Length: 377
Image (cartoon, rainbow, N blue to C red; front, side):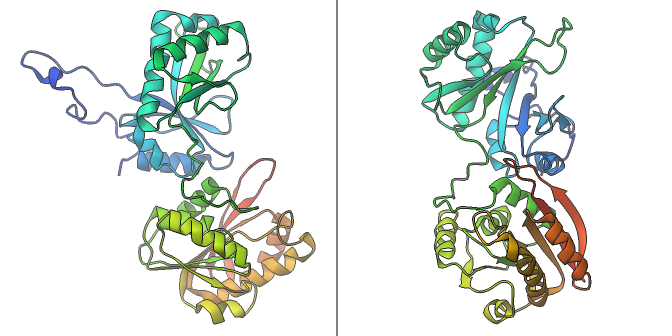
């Protein structure tokens, strides 16, 4: 596992045979600048994961003016970014000390973009590309698209292109003092947040990167017995089992449709878990799953697609009691909820059952859910 700021890897990593001929000095390696995007609020968790998964030249740093992106410099293969679970997407960052995007169509600048596109294609194949940029319908971008299509063989599809190129004004001053322009080439044909195991969509399912963040906040132990209350289509359960093995894993929900969807997603992820029908807010939970669970996870309904706002206080209070009854001594309970005031009130009433270890606020598509990490008292 890579450590934060370990620096340059050994020179023999990835060296070309031609570089090892007698009398020829190996070409110097350089780290690849990357930008990792994420849901605001998860920055520290993403930085921690990137330091674990990637070979970094120094710690991740925030992108100036952004609350949803980190700059990292990675020594290893780009395919390593596919192991990131908490990031939304990863981009190769190309910085150009040029006054306007038109300069990007020139030989050397164009070739850098083409090379980055090929690097992305080696990680995940694409048949088309598109721009995310102000003025992407201008004559300059039309010409740039023509040149890139000719050089790569990819089709330009301004609406549905798989390989994404972001073109923006630079975020840092260049050698001339001017910020110039940046081109960001997304790694792979899909965002990192688009999970291949999600073969069935379920209304109200937890965002997968938030679920992965919950798993990291909970901590991993192979000996954990894992119980997912109100499991829905299985997002939390799949993310926990994808992160590492568990001694046992069970998902419980009252909805037969939800359990059917969870079964399909678990199967696609090759994740071994048992699913049971149970009310997760009362004594029926212990009757269905027993006791002694080390890690409990929940994403209770909050009244938009499932449940009702009027009953959510009862749901949250019952969930906390039922989880406590099913939990082992010293268990962790990680809850994602949009009902912040309700949860805070229920936690005050349940202070003899659970102690709050941490709270993490997340911003996701206009919603501001919060992750609570609780310890059984």
